Every structure is written in structure tokens, then in C-alpha cells.
Image (tube, rainbow, N blue to C red; front, side, top):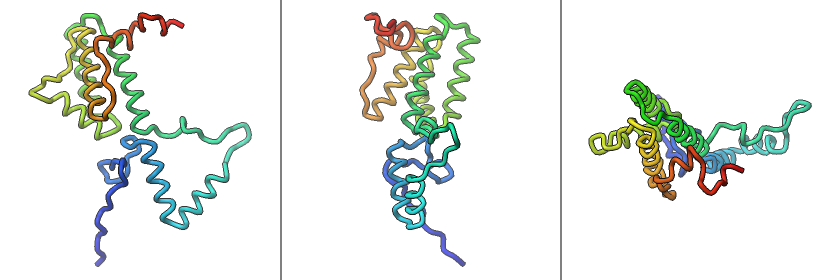
Length: 186
């Protein structure tokens, strides 16, 4: 009978998926690279393979080696793209939404919070929406309400990450109309 090994802790910054394996979509690119570098240096065979991989490129005529843009996104790239998409949704939301439109958006946000690729982020978003007896439930009657709500949701994430908050009074200029100084019109 063999003993089960105790699970090892992931390196700092690496988030494990629900299956216990490192989650690329929940981990920053820097943390992922550090983990890969550590794993490669801990094994002679892996180190030799990594050295070969860095000195040899496999390309076919007329192609170039894969760039970072062709790699799976890390949590930061996924987050930036997602916030762009979500704020763009608010910018195109009806000025006054019908009950059907409100219900459709509510359904979308519920599904989004369950299907988002980073499970930690998804769980956190669902928890935030349910906080304080639903104080953070989506406000969907108008574009203005929805845009402010989305900005507040984004700022809640920014606070957790230690990032600067955005002044929600300006969400529409940032995501819908463009800045009044004309910088978006050039």
C-alpha cells in the first residue's frame, strides 16, 4: 500500500483550479512564469528541455514563433478584456429598459457570474452582488443606473486588488460618449 503525498502549496500568486491544478486564467502571467521557471529548474530533464525550447524555434516557412498574444490570457488580461466588454454593455444598454430587457440582463449577469473562466473571480462577483441582503443587486431600470452599478462593481474589485478607484460620475464619458476634451475624437 502506498501513502498519498500531502498536497503541496502552490507558489505565491498561483491559484489552483477546482481540480487542484494551477489555473492559468486565475493566475497572473508573472506568477505563472515564476512557477514554470521553478518547476523547470527543479528537474534536470525539465531544465534541459526548457533550454532546448528557448534556443530552438519550430516554425514553418512564412511563419514566426508564437508571441505572448497567442498564449492563453492570464487573470489580468482576462480581467481587462472582461471589464471592457461589461462597460461596453452598459454603454449600449437602453436609456430606459423594458421589464423584458431588465430580465434578460439580470439573467446574463447571473449566468456570467457562474460561467466566468476564473472561478475565484466568479465566486467573488456573485458574493458581492448578494452582499448586505442584495444591496449590490444589479440596478437595471436605466442606462444611467446600470452604468453606475457596473462602475461600482468594478471599483469593488479595484479596492480588493489595491488599485485606484474610478470616479463613477464619469463612467459615460469613459465608456460611451468619449471625453469632453476630444481626446477620443482624434
